[in-house]
Amino acid sequence: MYIYKDVDDECEQKMSKDICLIEDPAAMKVGLEGTRNQILELLRVKEMTISQIAEALSKDQSTIYRHVKKLENAGFIEVKGDRKKHHIPEKIYGRKAKWFLLTPEPLGDETPFALGMDWNEERTKICIEVLEKMGFRCVKKEEVAEKLKELLEDLESEVTQNMIDSLDESVDIDFFSLLHVKFLAEILKLKHDEELNEEFKEIINAFKM
Image (cartoon, rainbow, N blue to C red; front, side, top):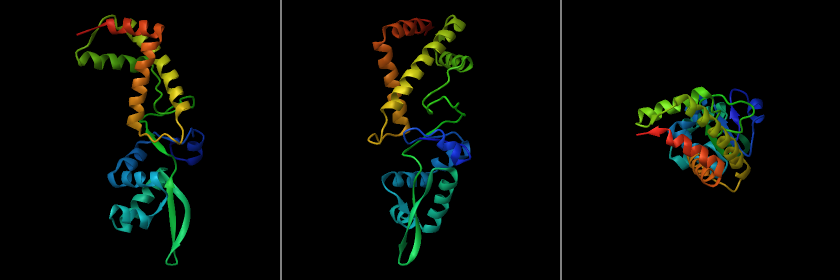
């Protein structure tokens, strides 16, 4: 994976196990468009030419060419080679990474990838505010916010690093499934870590319905 900003050398500095972090909003829009997303899914299976992609998606080559160039310019795909079909040269395209994770805000150099989150004081307070709007009233907000921040920081650090260490080429998983895995891993961590479990109970008890 890598973080896409505007230049490839910056991306490659943050490569980690073929997971690509995309934090530029314009690049995100490029990858989320329907046809371009289909192209990325095809290229997950194998590298292809524009004519092969057009045939697979039942679209004309000029349309596919425009989508491919946008994906290439945004850093999702790159030319992997070329071939000749009926003596006409064709470029072969492939993905720059196996997984693309989208994160709408810049990450620091020490953040492993988009699943990691900096639980600062402001973010924690916003979470509590949203929970209250959902009907979960919080008592002693300042105290709870500080405890929640510390707890989430510990969970984020350990679980995220564990996920990074566990991912390899044999794992074929999308971003939202990764989020679910992370959520389940945090629940399991809270259940089996007695100290964290007690801290979490204190936080839970501070919320009333």
